[in-house]
Length: 547
Image 1 (cartoon, rainbow, N blue to C red):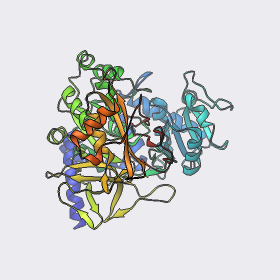
Image 2 (tube, helix red, strand yellow; image 1 turned 90 degrees about the vertical axis):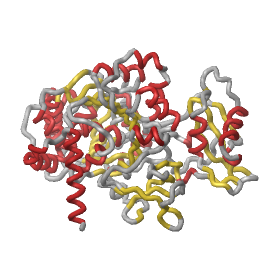
Image 3 (cartoon, rainbow, N blue to C red; image 1 turned 60 degrees about the horizontal axis):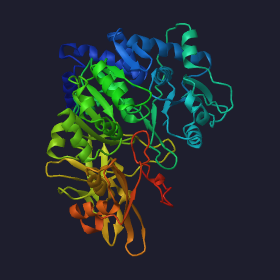
Image 4 (tube, helix red, strand yellow; image 1 turned 120 degrees about the horizontal axis):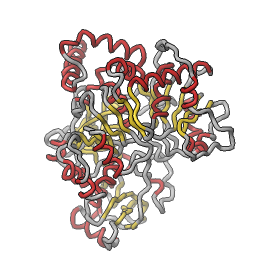
């Protein structure tokens, strides 16, 4: 039965890839050869090898310095891999990359893959002590970083070899001699023919690290067919252009970079996100898709309707949002502004893809994260076992071909029936669409009532006088815990704490009304838009491991 199931899954994946234009049915005989290339080089280096062979002169990457063809990317990473080989760097090394989104990050990632070295994508928001923890925990032997992160990078031991990926005057070398620049190595390296590594090195993604030390989640992709899990719900097509605004160190951004290469599509990136510049890039490159985190989407929508009307976005078919929760009001605004193009992904560093809400899902049920793609399983568990009734809450467990087998430090997450715990709590509606109600460890008990702050946050975010809000539980002598709301008011709204409490009282149960309301200028978030709850003002004792 397992063989039959696998065959059926494979047949479905082939249909999805055919629909996306990645394969043609008459050319299926050549597909095993392409897969062999991916198996020999791994999914990262294999994708660029195939793209360079099929469409060498097509633009593969556009960054702040301009365009590079697929042939350019393949050649540059060959040269860098050769230069590293001459320096004694090879398949036993672990290469950390601490870079913004530009060709240097891509060069390093591809070169590491071609050598069979392990690649660790490091969050650019980490401070020096956290970078040092990552270097120790992941066993980094090489660190590629931008000049601006030189001070943080200097926290790693001297035994870690350092290279500079981007220089723009933001030097911070930490008192050491400036590391060699990748561009110089590429320019000076002689051309050579590389052989596939004996074993592919794999990629390590880091958990968000909103508090505490980030943990490494190794990612290895077995069959190339797993890409169909994403395409099953998101209509990406071969040979188009994608603006990847989500950071490449994050799983969402890096995955879409690899998908673009595999599809022979152009990936457009920039070192820093600017909402107006993003609209110009969508128009200039005729992008059919944009990959965002919710805070980026909010900045674009906050430009107002006029800036969007000045740009030709007729090619845009996909606004793909991931990385943190998408508030219902923000998703509704996106649908009103851009039309039926919103795709909301729910997943994590550990489980990868869990569910995707299509525009039809969102229109029918704003706030939903949709349904699992073919090949993914999502199940809810309560204290007594699986939860199946619509509206009943349970812990969310996920299984897919992209899930991880454990953190690099040997720890893992709870599993049930072969499914991995996401740490979230949610419920299904009557149509089988999933809703995420919040983190399991964020739930508070106030006066004997269970309260999930996310429900209150969504209500406040929809208020016309509020830009965004965060709601947390704090100790209370009478009720055990009470809610505190941090609210960013819109300019000129004249909002007061009493207004906020009255709004919640008019729409939710009394025990969900925040006792405390703090009006603040902004909320602390990381590069993927996740709220850094431990950095909210006036929260003593909130430094534990929370996400």
